Structure formats: C-alpha cells, structure tokens
Amino acid sequence: MPPHHLLKPHHHPLSTTDHRLLRRLDHHDWLSPTETLTLFSNITDPKSIHPFLSKLSLRHDYRPSEPLYTAILSRLRDHPSIDSLLLRTRRERLPLSDPFFHKLIKTQSPDRALHTLSRMPSDFHCFPSVKTFNLVLAALVSARRFDSVRALLCALAPRLGVTPDTCSFNILIKGLCASDRRDDALALLDEMPKPNRVTYATLMHFLCARGEVGEAFALLERMGRERCEPDTVVFNVLISGVCKRGRVDEAMGMLRGMMRWGCRPNSDSYQAVLCGLIGARRFGEAKVFVVEEMGCERGRRPSFKAYEAVVAGLCGEGRVGDAEVVLRRMVRDGFVPRWGTWKVMIKCLCLDMKSCSSELYNVSE
Image 1 (cartoon, helix red, strand yellow):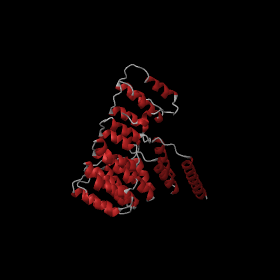
Image 2 (tube, helix red, strand yellow):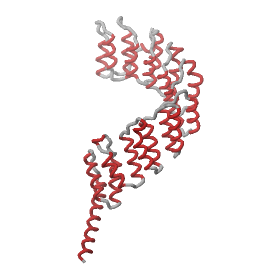
Image 3 (tube, rainbow, N blue to C red):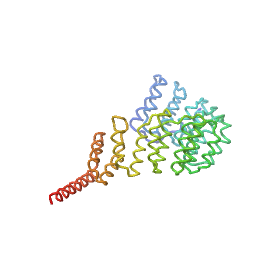
C-alpha cells in the first residue's frame, strides 16, 4: 500500500492542462504503460504529481515500474516530496537500478546526494556504479567538502563495493588544485595507479598558473617515462604557460614541434601563441602570424579581442598599412570592428597623413 499522506485529499489548485490530464484517469478504458508515461511527462506543475499518482494507484491497470518513477522524477527534480516518492518505491518493493539513482543524484545538493548514495545498498538493494560514485564525489569536491570526501573514499566506498578509478583521482586532483593545495595534488599523483592525459593537463595548468612552468615541463618528461602520450590539450597548456612568462619564442618552437609528438595544433594552440606575441608587444610578428598562420580558411580564426589588440598595437607604432591588413582580415573572418577600433585607425591615419604632409612641405622648402 502507498503511504497514507500520498493518498490524502490534495487541495493545491491544478492548472487547466493538469486538470484535463487528471480527468483522463477517470476513464475506465485501459491505460498502457506508454500512455501513463505520456500523462506524467505532460504535467506542468510538480505539485500536481501527487494527486496524479494517488489516483493512478487506485486503478486496476496500475503497474509500478522504474520508467514510471523516472518520468515522475524528471518532473519533481529536487522537490521536497522526493523522499516520500522513494519511500513509496520501497513499500511497493519496486527494484530500482543505478541509472535511476544517477538521475536522482544529479538533481540533489551535495549533502542529499551523499545521503542517497549511502542508502542505495541498504534501502534499495542497489549498488552504485563508479560513474554514480564519481558524480557524488565531484559534487562534494566542487563544494570543497573535503571531510566528506575523505569519509566517502575511506569508509563508504568499500561498503558500496566501489573501487575509485582514474576519473575519481582526476576529480580529487582538480579540487585540490582549485583549493591551491599544491603538495596534496602532487602527492595524489604519486598514489594514482595510472594517471592519464587529463591528470597531467590539470596539474600542468595549475602549476603554470602559479608560475611554476619548470615543474609543469617536468611532468611532461614524466609522461614520457610512463608512456603516457601527451595530446594537443597538454601542449596548449604548456604553450600558454610559457607565453605568460614572456617566453614566446619557446612557445613558437613548441607549436612547430607538436607534430613530432603526433599532435596536430588546433585553433587554441595558435591563439595562445598570438596572445603571447601581443603580450610581448611584438605586433609586427603578430600581424605576420595572423596573415600567414591563421584565418577562417585554416580553421584558426583569432579571437575578436586578439584582432582588436593587434590593430591597436600596430596603430600605436604608427604602422597604419599593417593595421589595415589586419583589419581587413578581421572583417573577412566575420567580425564587425567596434567604434573604438575605427577611432584608433582613423587617428593613426590622420597622424600618418600629417607626417606625410610635413615631409612634403620640408621637401618643397
């Protein structure tokens, strides 16, 4: 029997649509499971779920099923009545699978997600997959609930029959990096059975952001020793890191050498080098790089801000011709220059014309 409070009279006013759907349950014709799912999927207000379920459970064709409760779950989201819904599944002795709980946990706060995960084997006879385990782990790490994380890994994981995988460690490392716990993150790397590219890219990005580019390159060497081939993302992190330290020539060398590692540079690779040239105020080289290496036809379009910075930098150096070339390329790539960019160009052009007029005057003298 369903819980009594789910069958008590419901005084919440129903919308016109929900009222019409509820009246459908008064018909005596047989409702197929598909028709029942459609009814619940069309409910507009989560508060209408309970009168629907109460009325449905009184019909002779009522058959509780996981698809039905999944449809109800999708309408309730993290509504407070979720707990009573789960209690109902227990009383109906309805077996629920890991995918059902995965969907449920995605809607919950970290604390509620942890509570649901811990109840799965004891209350619902369902053991979570490592994917569902990692979902809760990620929620706790994002909330920086490291005490709960420790309890989850040390006490709860064995009871749940879950062995943390590489993804679990990557979630932890990302959280430690976000909390600026450098030593803990690197120590965890040593504990991992098999770090992957995501592991190294996460740590490299963290180290480069701290200015520890040398340590990031040491991880690249470690990848080689452990036969973990770097990918384009790893190189992009390192290229961006050295550019931010002003080592643009080194970044360009890495860009050229990526193919030797079996990695094809992508748009982000070129964008990182371009930003490095702009940051180093090497606008002439940036112009050549844009014209010869980038563009929509190559699938390497510079960003809007990068275009603006190159144009402004060239104008600041009085190189109106080069600035015009970059501006035309910017328009060709589908960008519409803002008034500020046109203002810089016009000012540079006027100064150039004034300089030419002065030179002509001096020649005529």
